[in-house]
Image (cartoon, one colour):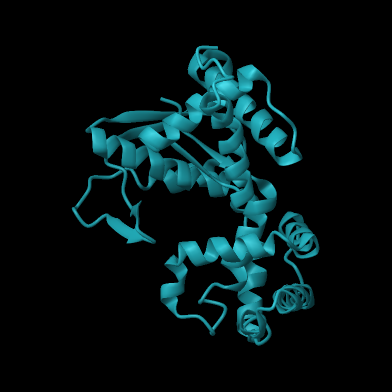
Length: 274
């Protein structure tokens, strides 16, 4: 069963913009309950993704080796407000124009966090283990996670390892209608290994390479080959039946992937046995 998480970097940057500037910890215009407003945040991320300027400037701040200046953070908040103002959302724009000095300082700290916190792995690994735990619990299974031995990512792995503990019956929170697991009693451990000696890691690399190729083609508006469409169909069916993979992509990319995966099957031109 293939488990994976697709990350479109442009979209995840937009989502991170939302998680930063609409965080009730920093933005006093929103109640703490807004932290779990997944659907609204997705809509906001879709809107932010339409501003290449905001997205690029935020990405530059995240990649910078030093803590950003307060002026740089305030400038970005202003540009984000202007973007929502131009999109006929004045209330959203106004909520981004009155950050306190303390809030700006906290955002500076967040953007200057350890490198692993600012990578796609830092965002995708938690989402992936949520899928794993949900699947394992539903089917009364256990597993050991074996991960390619990456350098300088030990804090990310330690974050996941701390979830490996027995369930006390109160380790699930419903967020936006979806369960969020705070413990992973179904996982027996996480082991780092050299991919040269682990065929399953090599197989996972092949799958990731294929998915990356397909999603990149979808994003560029390119057609898929018959083989790519056939495998995409089976992956789409796997997601529908088993919920074994998910991703952070704009809605139009999801729709285009679905069209390419199912169109040939529905009109009888694709042999899914390929």
